[in-house]
Length: 129
Image (tube, rainbow, N blue to C red):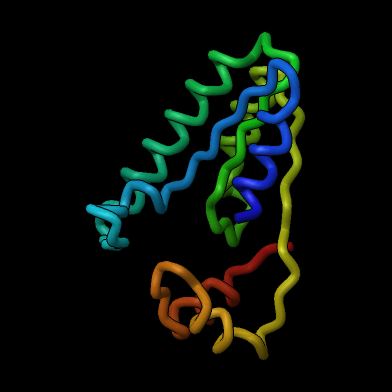
C-alpha cells in the first residue's frame, strides 16, 4: 500500500509518471502467490532489469517516480537499483520501516503472501539498518 501511495502522489501531478516494481509480482499466478525459492534470483534480476528500463525511459521527465517494492534485509540487495537510479538522475530515498522482534508473530499473521513466522525470524536476523 505504501508503494501505491508514493506512486499515486506523483502520478496525480501534472505530467506525473510512476511505476512500481516488485519481485513478488512474478510469483503471482492467476491471483495466487506461488513462491518458488529456485526462481528468486531470476525474478530479482528481471525486476531490476524492468525497473532500470523504466528509469532509462523516464530519465528526462521532471516528475517521475520509480518505487521498488521489495523486502531488502541487507544493503547489497538494493545496490543495483540505487546505481540505476543515480545513472538516470533519479533521486534515491530508501524507506526503512521500524519493526520489533516481539511483533514477528503478528507480522506472520498479517503478511499478504503467507510468509511463515520462521522465515520472518530469519529475515530479521539478516537485517541491516
